[in-house]
Length: 170
Image (tube, rainbow, N blue to C red; front, side):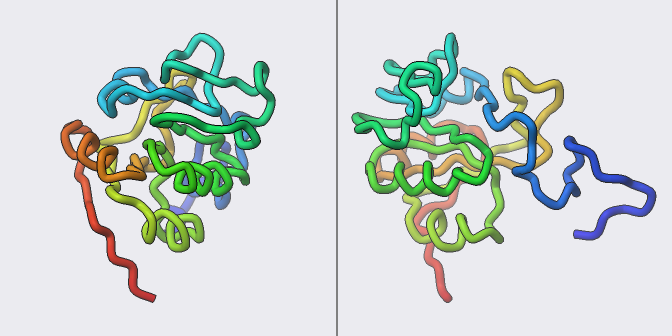
């Protein structure tokens, strides 16, 4: 996409070249969006006072949630930085849960992991307004279901359009 003439790049600019080069990589998901996706046992990269799951790990409490043993159905809104792929890969290895990630199907993350592995992808209608953000996200978002059970729950949310049984051809 070409930048419209006369615009300059800022941290909030959707044309900023690297959407992950932000000062803050912890964006708190609106709880109604999380609740629409069902109940979760664990959020391995949560925030203090933000109850997205029965058990919420924060960096302040456990350090790196990637290195801890995951359990149950996982809610994942990973840090939107360079480690996002590690978090999403770990969720697929775990086998049960839903991830909220930037919708970027042209990226390596999507091409090599999300598209071939997801049970269901829900393209969120509109832009997510994170709890701690002044404006809605500057990118579209998608909810990624790992298991068939997670896919069935996503299909019933009414949050956007869902696509199942994704077939990827190289």
